[in-house]
Length: 427
DNA sequence: TCTGGGGTCCTAGGACCC
DNA sequence: TCTGGGGTCCTAGGACCC
Image 1 (cartoon, rainbow, N blue to C red):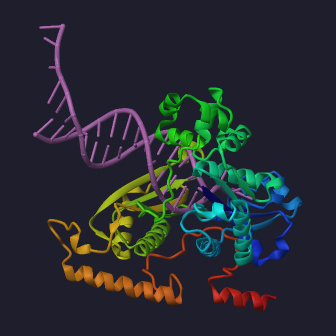
Image 2: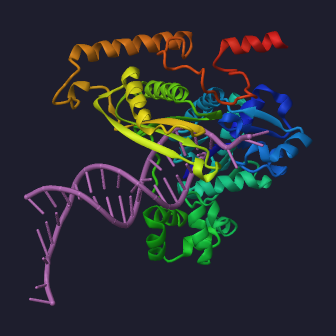
Image 3: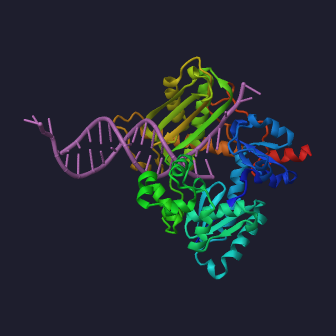
C-alpha cells in the first residue's frame, strides 16, 4: 500500500504557523510579482477565489472580505517543507518526496499495527512537530492513493484520512470522481475524454485499453492500469539528477532598456550557476529567453529564445554569465516592453570525476585556469553563504534597471535571524 | 513502371505535474 | 495598472548513418 501525504493549503498553512491570527480568516499567497493566487485557505476558496486567478481581477472581493494577502516567501516554505519531510522520514521505512508539499510513503508492513490507526498517528505527528495540517490517502497504487487523498481532503467526514483497501472501495471512489481530477489527466485529455463519453475515473478504468493507449499514449495507459490496481509507478527513492536548471522572473513594470535586461539576465545566470553548483553538476548549454506580456497588443508581442553551447562544460558563474549576455545580444529587439526574462542551463553532467569530461579539441583554457575558476567559485559561495547571497557579486548582477513586485512579504521566520529580530522590535 | 531496410540522434511542440 | 515559476515525459518528423 502507498500513502500519499499532502499538506493542506501548504503556503497559507506556513504563514499561519507563524501568525495564528490568520486562522479562520480568508488568506491567499500570491505568485512572484504578486500576480496570481497560488495558495488559498478554505475560507478564500469559499469566496470563489480560483487557483491561478489574477489578483487584480478580484480586488473587490479581496477588499470586501478583508482577505489577507501574502507575497510568496519560498525561503520559508522550503524550510517548512523540509521539516515536514524530516518528520515523515521517521515514520516509514521508505518514502519519495514528490513535491514541496507531498510525499509518498511505502506502508508495507504496517498492516499489522492497523493502517487506519497508524495513518492517523502520522497526521498527528506532523501537526505536532511542524504545525502543518496534512491529508493522507492510502491505496494499492500511487494513482489511487492520489485519488484517496483527494477524497480525504474534500470530504470532511473522512477527517483527513481516506483508505481504499480493495478493488470495490476503489471502484466506489472512482465512480464519484470526474476524470479530469485523476492524477495525470490534464485539461486537454479530460476535454477529449468527456467528448467521448468518459466522464468519471471509473469510466476511464473501464474504457478499452487499446483505445486509451492510442489516444492518451503510454502515460495514459499507465494511469488506466493504476486505476485498476496494477501498480506501474514505483516509489522513486532517490531524486534523479536534474536535466535542466531554470531561473526566470516577471518584472514589476516593463523593461525596455537593453542594459537593464542585461542586468536581469546576469542575475538569473548567477542564480542558475549557484543552483548548478548546489546540484554538483556542470552545464554545457545556456539558453536565454526574453518576452513581452502575452496579454500585450499583438504587434508588441515577442518571445525570443536562443541557446549557446559552452565550449567546455562548466559551473563557473563568470563563464555562464558571459555566455548568457552574448545570447541576449542576438535576441534583443529595441522598442519592446519586456515583461519577463529567464536563463536555462542544460546539457548537465556530474561535476565529480571531472577528469573524465570531454574537453575541446582546441582547448583555449589550460588546466590551471579551470582550477583557479573552481577556487574562485568556492570563495564566492563561502562569502555569500556566510554574509548573504549577493554580498559578493559580479558588477553586471545589479537591480538598478529592473525589479519585481513583492509588497506583502512575510519575514523568513525560520532561516533569517535578522528578520526574526525585526519582528521583536516591531512588536 | 520503376527507387530497401534498419537504425540513431536531435528538436519542437504538446501535455502534464506541483 | 495589474495575469508565476520550475520542471518532466512523450511523440512526430527531420536529418543523418550504413
